[in-house]
Image (cartoon, rainbow, N blue to C red; front, side, top):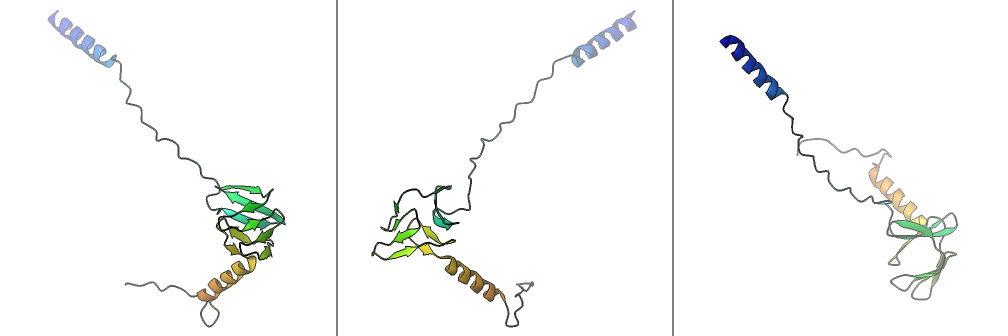
Length: 136
């Protein structure tokens, strides 16, 4: 009888331990969502695209609807006419870009800069220069 009581006690203890509720691990804190920056690579400024003057401010691009005066006194009209602070005028063509501070970069200037960069990468034989790997 003593053996039966001992086995019964052990069985009840084992059953009691196995039926205890398990606590859930603490929930992981998720970091707050990061703000999404659209057009991160787009610079603020005015650009002529397909005959339309497009104004980009704070990453948002819209067509220029009314004349805009920049910080240096330059005025840009919706048709692409730029009147500089000194009174001279320039008309934007496709690919021309003007920063909001009034610095003009023409499509021809960009093409020239690209060709200079390509020429700097070439050796005298017209082949691309390769960086030498080695110990410094």
